[in-house]
Length: 567
Image 1 (cartoon, helix red, strand yellow):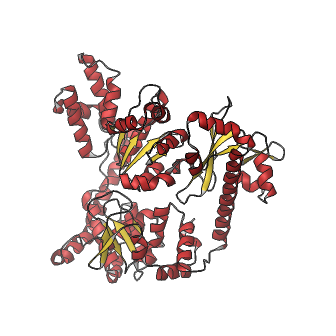
Image 2 (image 1 turned 60 degrees about the vertical axis):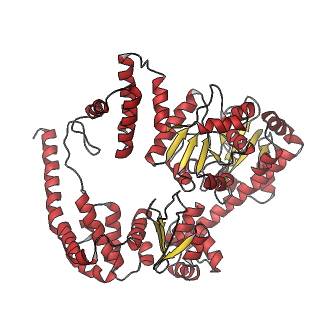
Image 3 (image 1 turned 45 degrees about the vertical axis):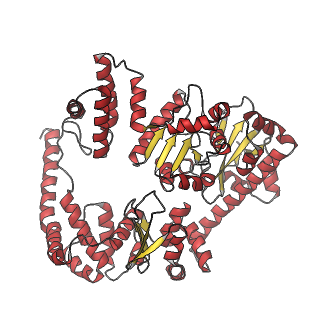
């Protein structure tokens, strides 16, 4: 839900009543540093403070991870909330009546109905597990070694057999079948009526960071297929944005600075039961970028412990690629053949599992170890084949320092000169191809570093010195800015020459808002002595030099198109 669904007067009153420094101090220790406050960032692990709060402008920004915005953004990030949910929390804290647009009120009411229905379903399933019919599920938990305390802590339940048991119970309590369907609890029959989605299954409630029930997983107790069944997605549940057991694990993850990621519900429960309370599960699917972003808020390091079968290895590979893209340091703990974390813990014990985690391989070493199993490096052909396979992985690494480190490590491991591997890596790249181009087609570079620096300097001046905005507006328009976030922020600044940072935030998307917070708190990129000349040079570059370069780029593209068409 967007910011426009809340009236400007209510947003301003919330900002007036809520002390941003006091709010953030509940999550991070802040110390005054001149006009700002600074401390360790609550969104990523760091040893040197790079997180700044500007109480006058009402903004925060981390120069380490890039997080930034206003008090609404902060509450959204810390609680994984929508804007309206964050607004409700802040309004409650400030004692402000929440006046919303009719659309916002309707959407909030719909989500609240779903949360209530899901909580009622969780209570129903828990009661069924404790009741007479729940003996089958309790016997299953005993066989799997799940302690009653763990079952209670994670609110495990039981969906009894029968097609309309949950439906009848919740309907009797006043829940409409259409609401239960939208929550993923029942499914419409062909023709008319509804039936329960979960029947004769052990139930695992899935909760968000506010510990609200958003979905369920169900495990069959017989030969029914599928063995595991998850709720379908709903307005309150997106599978790739939730991690099982994260609400229970987040404090332990913060304390350890590290998260343990397993595949399934039973793996996560076993880890918590044996003392590894920093474990979460990816709901039995490959990790997504959203899940990794969620983890990054609590830890900068991750250990993957997936099943040792072929599917688990494939899921590990996919997960490592996501961690690589997110610049998260991931390691892989390799289980013995045929084991998963649950079975290994119950067979070998927590001490052996701790030793396994201590020997977890960094992601590059894990990939090389896997590749090495497929090639005989005692032969010249095997060594070359292994090098080529690993170079395929190195090619995908965008971080230049990490790529260089991987090349060095591969050279040492295979006893091949590093220069030879680097030449091979270059040779494997398709000639004349860039990220924006096609094979055999030369593409001129896009906006260069000089342009980016010029744009940021002009934006910095407009953010820090609002009285200069009209002068900049006489020289150029927002279209002079090439990068999308730069262009969006420039458009807002030029359209509102007297607006403060908080008012500007309302017109921006998250990326442009983070840029605004960065520029509002960042020191000037040039000294006072050089500032006027630097600003004049930047404006001249954007007004005269860069448009000419852009015109040449467009001419180049037209020539390439003509060559391709044979004209």
